[in-house]
Image (cartoon, rainbow, N blue to C red):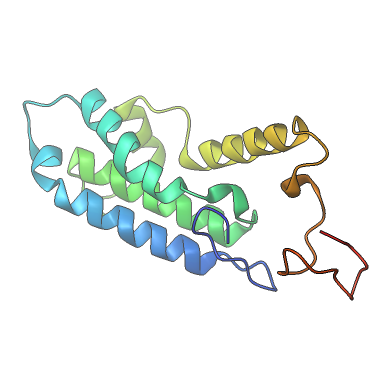
Length: 153
């Protein structure tokens, strides 16, 4: 477990992503009065969205595998949030590019997730060699010697 992310044998992190998008959608739903307000600028709404919902979704994203399914899920969640800010229904025939152009957005949620992965990698590379995270984990036992790979902790 890392930052609340659960590791599985097959590196499937979709359950984690589903849980995080569900929490983030609850956050955006609770701020419905902000999204509908005409007195708050779209720039301010985007900053609120980044500080609340996007950080909720991306918490622990460093551990996710890069798959098409995850990329599609992140993009769908991101566009759901942008459409909510602009009060555009999903039934209206507006492309994602039109929505992003209207908000003046260049960088997407997937790029933020990749940037966080790269930052974690750089952090690990700069660590001392005697830190646990830089060593190969092989078992859950903290004090005993691992029989499967003869790696002592």
